Length: 92
Image 1 (cartoon, helix red, strand yellow):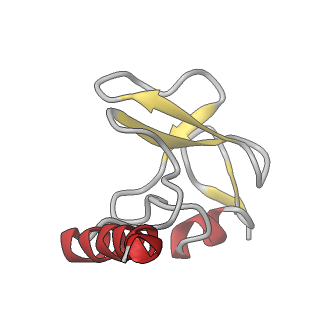
Image 2: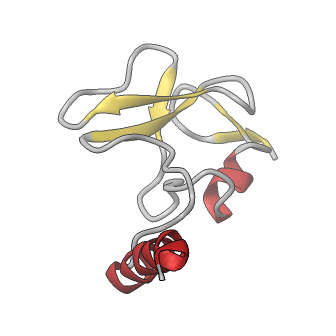
């Protein structure tokens, strides 16, 4: 029975993760932060502490279009879009 203990433990952990709705995807930012898009290029992004404004050269993503996980719908979309200092798309 002991040789199966690691398998049972792993199965239990996986079941717990799935039951709680935890995602297996990497989050774009850590807890207490939100992502912002760099102006003028497709790949620039950083994370900003909640309650703080984006640094110079970055803008907030539009509400409802914020990437949450690496390679999710919005992460892929914004990796192909350039925005200006107002957050307006200048190239897509």
